[in-house]
Image (cartoon, rainbow, N blue to C red; front, side):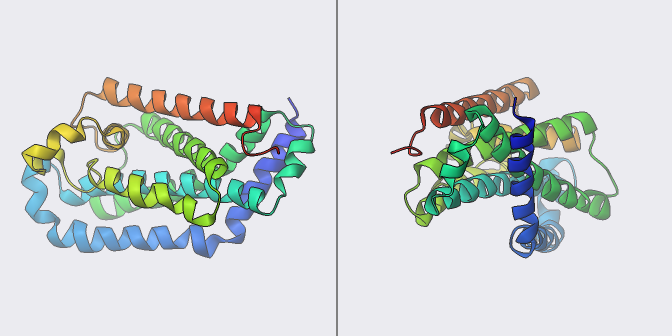
Length: 253
């Protein structure tokens, strides 16, 4: 393995994050803080009976998962598309780097950004609830798996997109509705009966529910099922991204 090339690519992706820190780090933190203050503390008391915990405790894990999803996807998709848009991707293709090393380099940068944001937001948990994640090992492992999953999806979209508007399509028309219907902000038990069956088909529900169990020690779906679906999706997305790079899809004329 070309460790020098891999480390150079990963370091460049990390440096990119810190060069635009005012765009990618502080806005999600401020948005999450406002969610907690306005929704979690103001109206959350009405939902405590349904969740069995204080609503702010239920809300924060969902917000952390949401931020990890959005940060990892945005980093990898925007970075790769920018390389294609500026044609600097040719430098990577001619460098002594395999498809695995290139994909791993992009994923490392995206996962690192997601972990930084997710763990900064995790500090809201003891600040507002006086508690820490119930299962630290599972919490960290799932955060990495979720970040890998959506970083890989970001690479796929970054290859598929032909213009910057295409990068926003999955976030607007796919991620946002699936997250809102995936239990990030409210328990599935409070949803209309007609929607509960659809929730069972929503992969975001299992991703968020597994992460919430790691933080709170309680979940709405069987834990093994949620973790299994999350791992399967992460492995499938990573394999597809690797395959697309290996064949040079939309990378070589």
